[in-house]
Amino acid sequence: MACLSDDDGDGTGIRILRNRAEIDELAEYSAFQESRRKAKQSHGRLLDGENTPQNIALYGFVLGMICGGGLIYGLISDATWPPQMAYFLCALALFHFLEYLATALFNPDKLSLDSFLINHSPHYHAAHAASLIEFVIEFYFFPSWKTFGLLNYVGLCLVIVGQTARTTAMFSARHNFSHKIVDYKAPDHELVQHGIYSLMRHPSYFGFYWWAIGVQCLLLNPICFALFVYWLHRFFSERIAYEEYTLLRFFGDEWKLYKSRTPTGLPLIA
Image 1 (cartoon, rainbow, N blue to C red):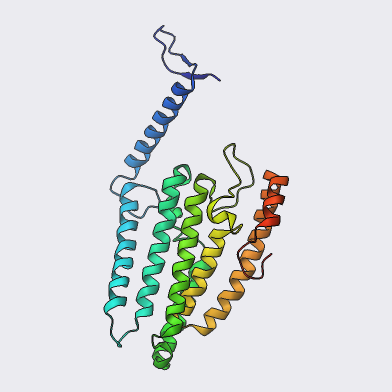
Image 2 (cartoon, one colour):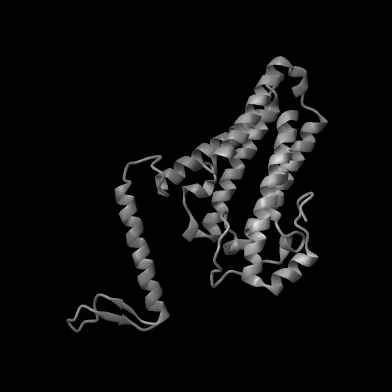
């Protein structure tokens, strides 16, 4: 494969790149120039939606403050305000940070501020808003409901298990992982079957499912707990059906064999 560049020393202004190293070097230089162009355009700007160092630093700083502050308050809090809200904020901040970190490590070409998943969707925001509203209302009118006890520890354990499973899945799949379902098979796309993927077909979904359920158990939100079970089952049932359709197109019999011996990992979803 040949690629044209701008100088070969013969005065024509054209140089033919004949080997892969030169092509990669040109691509790297072009990417560098593009990043410099974007940096100049966003110079001095914050929260402009661009994946610039200043925005990454700001997002990371805010998430770190929420995570650290939540953890510290949860450990030293008194009866004035229950610790589960602090643990929830800590878990939420850590979740969004790890989503970006895994993408940065293994999918830098897909990296953007959206990789934090903070602006995931209006439904995602509404779900968290509903859980916070329920917690505050119930704590105000029925404070005894929010006394920290056994169920809170169960919820906290589910959050830890869910986060561990999701992060492990992203680190196991590496460049094969994507936040969005793709409709085309990339040349380097592989069917991941090792590690946690040898135990379940969708460990990242398993992780988020139990993380979200665990959060509601941690907050002791009976209404949102029931709603989350319904919403998550409906969402993942539809998403898994479509994703597995694309995987069947990509991998054929290899996918059929893998599916036949590996469960989804999610309750009531075959």
